[in-house]
Length: 184
Image (cartoon, rainbow, N blue to C red; front, side, top):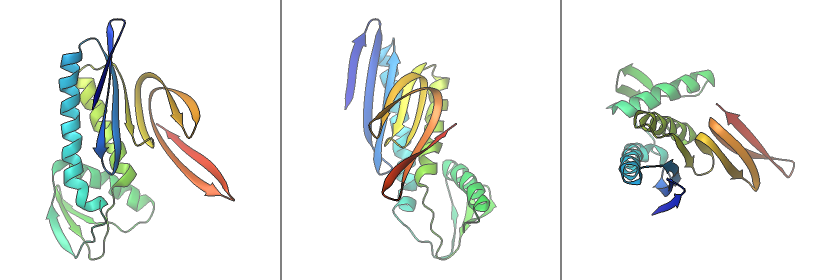
């Protein structure tokens, strides 16, 4: 569904769809609604493609000791994930060469939050190439990027963000919910 509102000489476009098991939402301010709708459609098509190639991983696929050739985007995501797996001493697949990975028996790769941030970064770069100047990317309220200034609400509290990535998580400690923000 697309929401299109004329504000002064700018259009506000809001669109969302289910991807990576959550809602991926875009909010864009633009002076050229038809061109921007085409760009947004292209971004959504790309996110849908990434969702389709990573679906088996985040659905809990367990590897049985196999070497796989993977698409370029998967290779890039695995390299980034490998960095964090090594830093946290996690068990992870082994990179044989570019786009070729060995997944040991019992290995599980769940791109989860890191994939959402990775996708937001790809869409951000795409929008920059298309000269989209003000937008908010929101992956289920836990991974966001704002280009320009926006007011967002997280767990009932309002925050002003501008030109930044935010990752939000919460944890419970002694019956009290706490928020963890990582602003990049």
